[in-house]
Length: 100
Image (cartoon, rainbow, N blue to C red; front, side):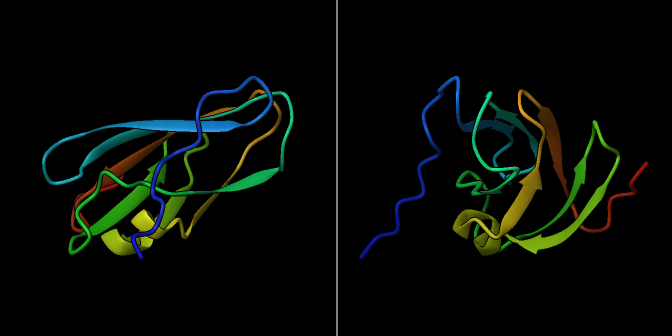
């Protein structure tokens, strides 16, 4: 059985995210919460390489989200909190990249 790794379609009331990543899966993912829904959401990032490791930072909040294996990101193990109508940009970088 192949897991469903699609992201939810855009809706005013729910959560939605998309990414702009390079061939290795490094780049940024934009996360939006609509005017309703849960206070936090597990985010799957299906565009990463399953066998690579990634360091994540939430750029608007400045929070370091930690290091994840690509398969963890594909499976949706990353959870993001946002207020209604909130937004975040998650930077995916090499584990040895300097975090500013």
